[in-house]
Amino acid sequence: MIADKLSSFIRDAAPYPERGYHLQGAALPCNLPQIAGVFLAEGFHLEMLTCQDRRETDRVFRLIYQFNRYGAPQRHVISADLSPDATAPSIAAIFPAADWYEREIFDMYGVVFDGHPDLKRILMEEDYVGHPLLKNFVDPPSPYRSE
Image (cartoon, rainbow, N blue to C red; front, side, top):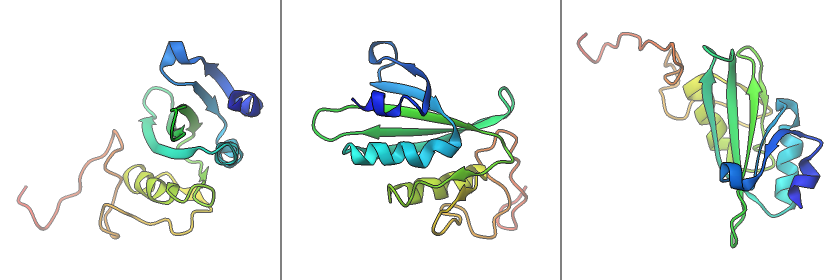
């Protein structure tokens, strides 16, 4: 079972009946590539990757990875807390779909993914200043709209 293979990486695992996921747990950011490799070897795909700005309450960014299988669903959610000045390892080499997710998180939150093949903005203009999904974000004045 995949939970056994991930037991050395995952902290605070919760069973499916309590959370609605087959495995939900927290991991250290440095272990994310190894965890992704286990999911890939077991036939899973990356269903979703997102970020939460928890700097006000927990002083971290929380990266949330959701893996699943086709056929009989087997959904697993792994989170990793990252200090605001730290970088996260990219899993784009393991799951190519992570390329776009990681670029979106970089663009919207400013989280840098080490080893990403082409980390640049994906939604905002390349010269845009700021990261719009940060809780303390203030949109800079634009020459295209009246204030």
